Amino acid sequence: MARMFGTDGVRGVANRELTPELAFALGRVGALVLSQKSGTGVHTRPRVLIGRDTRVSGEMLEAAMVAGVTSAGADALLVGVVPTPAVAFLTRALNCDAGVVISASHNPVEDNGIKFFAANGFKLPDEVEDEIEALVHNPPTDGRPIGAAVGRVIHGEGERQRYIDHLCALVPVDLSGLHIALDCANGAASVCAPDILRRLGARVTAFYNQPDGTNINVNCGSTHPASLQALVREVGADLGIAHDGDADRVIAVDHFGAIVDGDKIMAICGLDLLHRGRLPHGKIAATAYSNGGLIKAFRDAGGDVVITPAGDRYVLEAMLREGLALGGEQSGHIIFLQDSTTGDGILSALKLLEVMVRTGQPLAELARVMPVFPQALVNVRVRSKDGWDSVPEIAAAVEDAVHRLGAEGRLFIRPSGTEPVIRIMGEHPDADVVHSAVSRVAASIQACLGME
Image 1: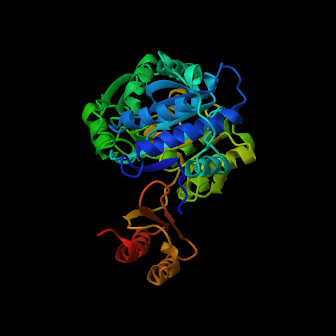
Image 2: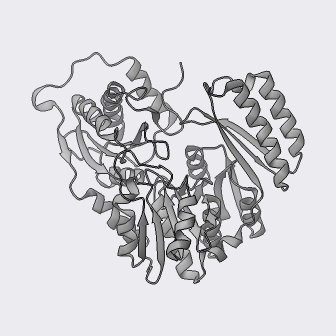
């Protein structure tokens, strides 16, 4: 049986794979398991904070999750539509026993997900997820609370504002004079990112900030930056900022319309910290999918990059293990661990803007700090991800691609932890070579496993 929890919680098509029944079970069992582990002891009974993004299935799954949590005798604190990192922050700030965010991040609207945070605001380790999953499959048979012992629903008034106040106090940069084009992906960033930037003094032209439940991530946001590239030039902004559906990612665009991805943002912020003697151990953490130019930029400056497997959980593990303050992914999921327990796209944007203001340099100039090696990334939607690496035709194509890329190149292939997709990424100094190698592997996977 495939593991229920992927690399970023439980995900699936809402009401088909991620059903209300499953949300109920996860709510009940999650409340039981995490309240036993939290030890907060602040409230008269366990309390689980629940937030969601803007997709239409969120309210349905929230209702089922609330029923599960309260049936376990825990209170459900509802904070409504908020970014995923707001759930992490508020769980810890409000001394809750656990936090839950109902979101599928950058995935299309039909998908949704359930992600847990522990009382300390960190995502759950594998062993705790496995404990929850085991109890979902084999529910506890002891009696449920009745009468006054049943959990209550608490509507968190003003908790979103608490998160806004927190970020403004954390990075009190004066953005006066900056014109920012902001793409909110019709997601959770819509309810707070424009307010934060304006409160700090920026002139903000907001786009894709009218969520209707079905337009989240549709041709907008950090995974579709082409719209923002055009809009930055159209409105004459100094830069553009794009978030994904739950605002844990950020991608920037300079005033020329060029993309500044997560690697370059880490290079700008990390090297700024390094040069000021504020980067612990002179290192950051990044995944194997990050551009080789990031490693070169840090090593040339006397620093280094710790390379991890793909996935923000592995970045975080490396950061905690090695005492690092900054790490992330090319996708724009960046962790400033001294300020947040998880990736926060709005916080990352503020950190980038802080460097711009302090140095007085435009984003285009700051981004020159990192060379970019040609890369090719192809996502192939497949019928099944299981056993892809044991198909002889695919193995032969991979072997041929590795030979073509040679010692100067890199090839990484992995199934997505959240979608029915296999990702192929290649890197080589010669763009034609890398595109050819990756295309051949993608074609082989498509032929053997691709959806009709």
